[in-house]
Length: 431
Image (cartoon, rainbow, N blue to C red; front, side, top):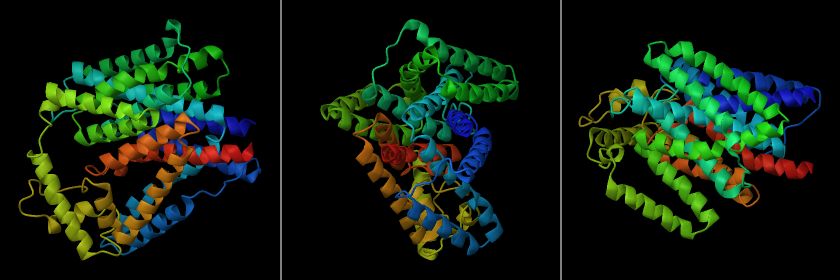
């Protein structure tokens, strides 16, 4: 059916642009929602119930209540528009319920992830993004956002190689990642020449079109080329993550890889532990400066967390309001804190409690718990569910040290993968 194929193409394009452009993602999400609405109106599909419906509804309602009771309700309600991004969960649950389509959308995610990590590596080695003050951000606005998405893409590629069918790869099948990396190199060259937008905008448009074409293609040659993506993504994402010098993403990646290792073969956890110890012993330059909790960044986190606790104690029910931390932080800031201002509290749980109160935190924990349980139950049936479980674990662990779900790109990646186990259940129900 033409509307079903249009929905697949749009979701694949969205998945590919998550790592490179939030603007493109939001446009594609809106278009995908329109197509889903048309299909619902034509009774070509239906939205089934999931275990996440109630906690999502409760979290959304409480967010709006918190905004209403904020010191600046208009500003807080403006920030609450991020709730619209949760529509991706339902869009993805419908599309990913078809096994072949699920593979194609996740291939598209790795295609976009390859673009992100390739540009980050080029930025580090050739464009001077090699210091703590200037770290590679790829196509995204901030290096921490880029590191968070690279972490997720790395785990998806690792899960595909560890639990998916072994790809029958030939050298000529690498034309797809080779063409993508060549395009990224052109973007980097234009950036170095002082024309970043001249390369980025056409590249993002071409990437979205290529992802849609990849998902809709029936060519065996294209499918074989897609099978090479995780082989290229895994090492490049690992290197991009290392040179990002972003500690929360390192810790999250280790947590996600531990989940994968434990499910593949428990003894691999010891191998992973040995690899981490080896890195700590060798202390490469990218790691050496970050192996401390006495730097200004770590001290600032300690004091901002103390301020966050004070915010929760002051307003435990409705919180300060969504998006209000920047405005109220000076009032709660401890004198010892190095920075006078903070846009957020660098911790998912504390941020949500401070913004939306303890009930908001409870609803968020309910949603996360239901998503993790669903992924764990489905992990034995599909590599995609194992990937979802690993990414959820990584984002939650990294989120103890960074408000990573405040980044729309990371949130969209989380929602896309959180839909996988529910899509698998839907697929079995339709079989």
